[in-house]
Image (cartoon, rainbow, N blue to C red; front, side, top):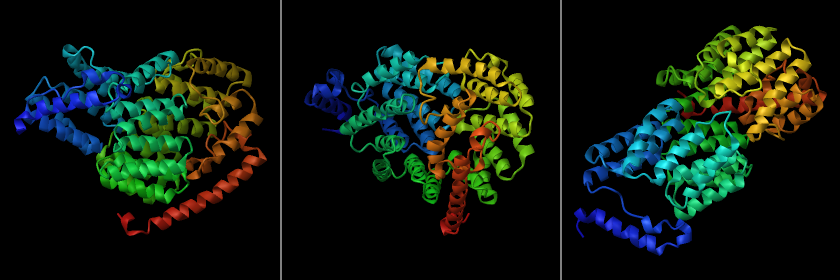
Length: 507
């Protein structure tokens, strides 16, 4: 057959494969399987180049992929596969921080509507729409609605078996929103049965194994991902997180450094390295990486957070407070915890300075709605500030007053149905302190927070929230454990300083 027959050949192959596959694997989709929807060879070539660059999933490669998909659409405006790939690309750019939620919606909504004009029932278009809605998460979200959207997404997986992005997202939501790690692993392993060479599925599998504390399995999956796609920087980052979970900070930093080499335009990798050095109270070592962050993305939320951490590392409290206030007032993006850090550092410093009422009034001046404790704000910035306001009340309100306000918010969080105050949940210690059960709060703090690997929780050595958690910190068991952490912190710091003597770390 000649090259001009390529599209007809693809259609024939697709139909033959569909017939051969067990219908249970594809959920009955085999009847509708067909080849790529263009007859323009140049458009098709651009589309393939775009997919190649998209699979690398770096800052520069996603930009290249976007250009290729647009070129394909310029050659063939009716090329639905290219339009769907472009939607996926925008969602991936959101994942890297290149786009925020508002920018992503602005890009993908018209493209989804264009697909629906010709293919109203297109499953990929619906899957991408659901993916954005599930990621654009509101603290006031209804659990039943999230469950319904997730179920719809999971039911689509057999019908769009090669859509790795959607499969990975479903696994992430199962793990991080609902703590159903075993189900998430099944979803990913089903994908690997279809494509055993999919590096991104291995990467997601490794991340979920890590979350499930299955560290050996995580290492095997992540190394496989890195071997299959050595140009993809995300597996290097995932290996860094795994080594931190294994309490090996030098190894984690080495993987981060390699990620920065693979994707030099990604300012967030450089930011992560800078913050580790600042957490280790090595500001001179962190500053070259901070300079790289500023050069690449001077105005990003991540950059502002690194600047804040730099002030903390240099004990420049006044500048840290000024920076945190600015970040809060401007309601900066949530990317990589930037807004969270600003609020909680501001809260902690103001409590320690005896200025809790002033801090409370400032937060309320920015967001007056956050004092309606019976209502959870619709955006995460508001929810974080409301949480902080309640803790700031420790400095000027009676226990009964602040407990009553806290319980209103706690009831709303319970109504959402997402885990937040069970054993080892993110809000358990704070909830127990606010409700006056100091013994239970101390036990939770000892058994869970102080038992986490220090390499991924370097802030533990600083005794954060000293005023809010004062009763917990006063316990003799906590004092003894913190003394051990200080020794371990000094050892890790020394290990990193030795690592920095290696030639590859000389900048």
